Image 1 (cartoon, helix red, strand yellow):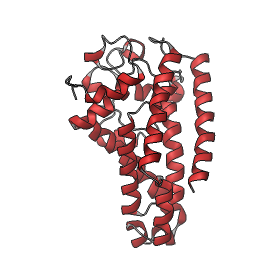
Image 2: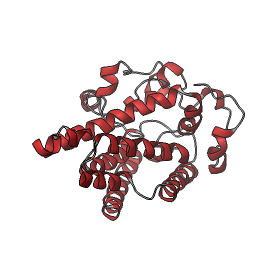
Image 3: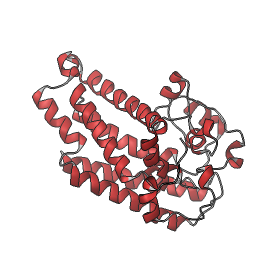
Amino acid sequence: MIEAETFYRLIVFFSIFALVALLELIIPRRPKNRPVLKRWGVNFGILFLGSLLVRVIIPWAAIDVAYHVERLNWGLFHYFAFSKQSVFWDFFLGFLLLDLAIYFQHRVFHQIPWLWRLHSVHHLDRDLDVSSGNRFHPLEILLSMFIKIGLVIFFGISAWSVLVFEIVLNASSMFNHGNFRISNGLERPLRRLIITPDFHRIHHSVYPDEMNSNFGFFLSIWDWTFGTALKEPKDGQLGMVIGLDEYHELKWVSLKEALVFPFKKNEIKV
């Protein structure tokens, strides 16, 4: 399964990346603060190291675990026979559960200090664009994979659910970090269902109350349901400041500095 997963994920990754990057050129939403290629070098360098770390430490990807769990009939879904009653419900519930788990995982990473130190690397970015959706510290990527594998084993989530979710999660992360405009007539109804760039951008504000809102990655229903949705930033989409306020004096964060940032003695506010 790992070869198929890699093939499909790469196709979607490069397709969405190219599309969002093109939209950023044609209809940009905000002016850039930092050189694009330098930021991309850091952000994709972090992604590469994170992917490498996961492959080295975990021999099986989440989809391979799901495949074996299906064969062995492990998990609550198999116990309650969801998959025998309806393949659709088995797939649908698995996808929803994974998306809900990512929402709560994101909230937890903002609340627990040592997890926030890892996640803060994502918030250090002074600009947001298609590359920002891949800027997560390698140890955060590793922890996230362990969480997904644990959920797959406990609930018995199907391999198809995991494959589609992983593809959608990666694609939506690039989409909702994109620096491009969507007309209000389309963006307003769209954000009621999925995370749009304007909706997610608020989460990257320097204001703590704005940063601790809009936690979703794909479906926005969790933010609306659990009261963490914020419609607009105080300073507006064009006036809002992105990043971590206490580190705004940093003119540049290199790949090395981003990797060691969580382990510095500086106090990183949650």
